[in-house]
Image (cartoon, rainbow, N blue to C red):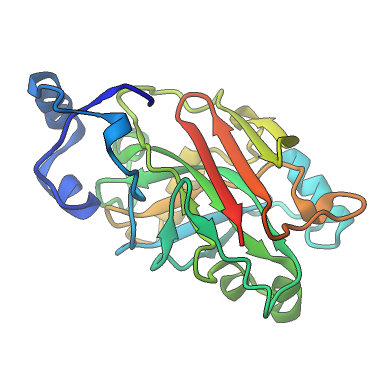
Length: 265
């Protein structure tokens, strides 16, 4: 984004944005707006600072990560159903903000680079077209996780919901800009070492499949965030295990969207 010119909309947050504009209207307005500020003159904020809708995460949704989890005893070879869990969204951070590892209660803070999608329409028992049309756009997510808390409680919510454990790019790629998410490369670096390197084509369950399944019995409200799962290469799956330490820098790259970079304290 360096030296790019930014256009400013008359909205205070994401909830107001999706209430006032659908994608066609937003695209039309964007063409008419004149650039008024350079990107170097702004401080990025989280695209969503506090979610008023659900954050739904998909577990073990890449073939490579599933194998990694089987070795760790987290998943089973014969599992045929998708795995979903929720993540608290009241303290979302973005690039260049600090991840608090919460080292007073966990020794196993881990990273998970993921593609996220955000809805701008409510959906319930939708058609295939309605599912795709409900997607506002794509973001990068770091689903930070405390593995020891995850094992201790034998569930995900607390271990993945500590303050600053929901990290989201300040950039959202709207669906109309790039319709096909099926070929996004996801790379995660820790201190410039490549740890995760996969492609969204290797998801076990597609975004459409997951949204269709979830909305078959749940109304997914506008603003809902779906984090679509992480590939192999997380710290838990390495030998020896490589959890995050103070000063570590995590960079997650999805070329079509950009970079999400954070430092641990």
